[in-house]
Length: 214
Image 1 (cartoon, one colour):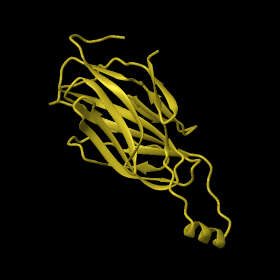
Image 2 (image 1 turned 30 degrees about the horizontal axis):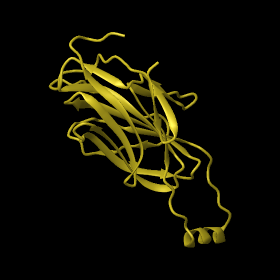
Image 3 (image 1 turned 90 degrees about the horizontal axis):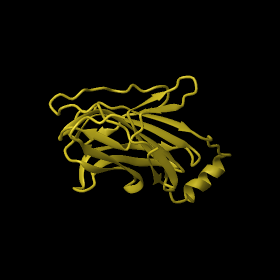
């Protein structure tokens, strides 16, 4: 069934998948996922490839209430330290859809290994699912992917993220188009909030001599 990984106290299971979508670096296929209903967050990027991505953010959880003006004044004068959010899951997959009836996200083609006949190679499309909770207020989010052996960052994106209350669960779909892989081995996917690592997972790029079939 594949391997499992622990992310922020939660166990995430995913399965190996067979890659057929690698293209030559000089001819990458492009695709962009369109956001569904709800809040859309378009992150900035420091990578050198035009990924053309829109990050879809969905949130669930209880709303927040406050009593009156005196309560608000007390909170402002005695504000607790901002909590560190917990990462419930980081999952890699081919694509993520939103069911318009239930408003739930559907992850298609989860994987932890990509196979390619040559390197460097460009992967046409993949998505990162990220679920965060137990935050309060505004945070600076950074999502990055780096090659473990060389510690070279091959993708990075940043943007603001706001929690209304600690019970809120924010689910994010980050589609990545045309990622270029230059070396085989392990790659780390890391989620940072306010310069603190809150979750990470690994996937692998494997160089093979012939096409691998399921």
